[in-house]
Image 1 (cartoon, helix red, strand yellow):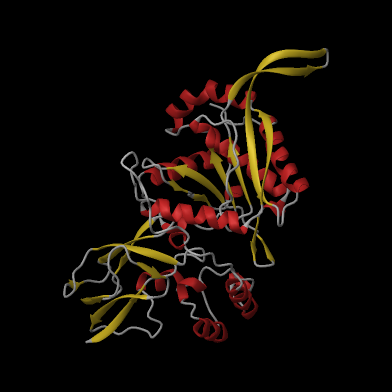
Image 2 (cartoon, one colour; image 1 turned 180 degrees about the vertical axis):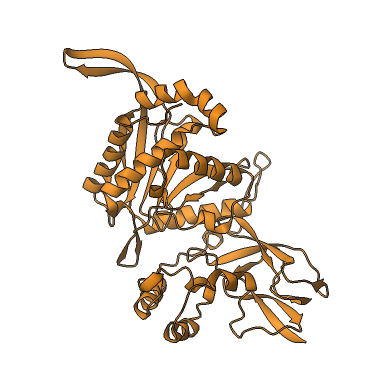
Length: 399
């Protein structure tokens, strides 16, 4: 029988490692192709790795709670099947079977240790999205220039002095990862936050008027978040230099608008599902996809790819009763917006006949941005654009 080295596959260029959480098979067990062998967890979501071959689980190379790097061998399987030297699981080969890579690109990838799954994440500029020599060399150059920050576990003291009036609570895995990401982001980006107050009276009243009939007709909750997403997307289209990332001294301008939604989980942790190509949806489409993503996020049913690739993030801190805040940028993005609590306020209303005092629904928008590449003019203009789109929102869904 031949030995097959089971590899921890790439799950996107932003994920470099995963924690082995549970093995579902024991050493010596017979396994069938597509049997789930091991459960893993990344900083994004939990996932599973299945067997690409029929055979036997000969040896586990990692124990539960150990961290494996993408591309490393995590188990040795024995099989009588033939397989390619690239050693890529069949499920990943299936994902790539319709994309052509030239011998030159494959040769460069092999030399640099880039497997087929990682190749599939590279944006191609050739015909039909084909990856060219220029594309892969640019990808390698950017990857090598990526800043590496020390692990959070290495930045804290291993000894803790306490007394009987204190309790030591060990961070869970997700909290450790979140802590590391927050520290990394503050170390990488020069954070600045701009605030603005937006009048959302028309939106609130419209939603209150039709939300019940809307749910009866569509089965979907009419969320205010869908409107915020649409307005943020419009502002990004007007000011596309918000939709960038930074690697080293290179600015990567994104053609696609992928909006991340910071979502609090029942256990108090955080996950950020991503609306891919958010600019391709109308309001009804946004309502459906947001409801679906949030529902599956809270029940831990998201796929790894559904938490990757975001280009801008929105956080609804108003759901916690907060007015405004200074959100931390979700790397490698350069901006994040927090939406505060919507409140009734006494406001000055300008009319052709003079100013009046009235009750309006207001919310604060907090826009944190990376001052390395976004100056105050652009950062301030962006949040102002979002506020204007909210105030002029066309309530176009009719029931």
